[in-house]
Length: 437
Image (cartoon, rainbow, N blue to C red; front, side):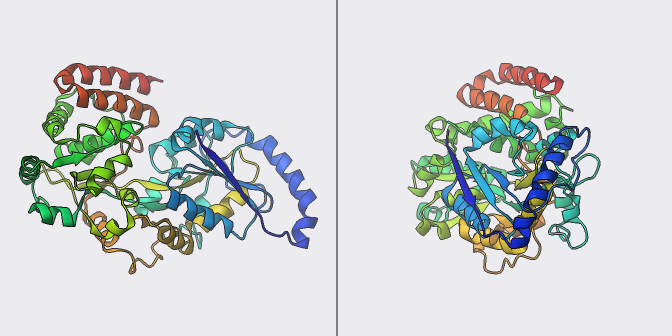
């Protein structure tokens, strides 16, 4: 498991140097107090912006990591130590980071139910001040504000980018094969049959060390068959994974299995882009981060279409996972955390990050100039602006614990589709265990 630590420093002013002793005293007092926080989010003040700030970061792809490092290096508000931790290690240790008496000030993660569950434990700092007045997030959309709030309506998250999921393909490959993006579910199946007949693998996926990728198709089929409201309720434990509605989803999923690359179980999410780049596979249901997995000279060739409508009576919905940062209530430097979050949330920082990360992420700040963004990103913005519902992703709309049950059930189902009934029964039992814990 990899871990990389980078400390960025600036010269201290005389005023800050003279204030050092007072800062240490305040930090010691704060450390003694924050451990007693109970219920709701942590307080929004305390500490000072001078002194060391730790940013615990889970971004692993090279260009996005370098972009964040450049942002942190340019931060004018204090010394920042940035720890880059492998994503799965970060996920496993996140609770420990937040519960520690020496928590990192700021942590990269994502909005949704996971952040809310930590807020309920009193582990996240109340960052509502950043959403008020002239705060860095004050102009963000109401949807983002709601997504970043705890059960009491306090903001506990700072979203800095989001991205869309769709079926990605290469325009040149479709032209070579004489096919076009489908506009209906029947056309999608006809396209897969056409490609199979040409010796082209219709669909790729990467399930080896990223088994959560199997949830992409589950989410979209549930959204298309049962709708976003049912999907959210299912992931909240209000429906069972062996209910008839889920059986209908899995039956449709089963129809897709013959179209998948037989090597999907040995690919990672990144590996799965390679056969598409090589024109061996045609399509990949994945987040827009996939653009970074293609050679630079192919990125302008990428295009996408939304998973077609299956049930005409169901409102349109798209998955748009939202990334950003939250702050630990038990850290020693609350004001330093708020200052760093404000910097990361600014339009200037978002613009720099998106451009330098070479990603297809979308900015959360309405003040970012998107006119120079690629046609692919412009199309992604249009997709999300025109959909009726937006969800996150399986674990972001539920929990990492429930995601683990999905990983087990869906990878087993893809390998043994005829055992669907018993697999769904096992999934429901495992889910009940998660909700009961």
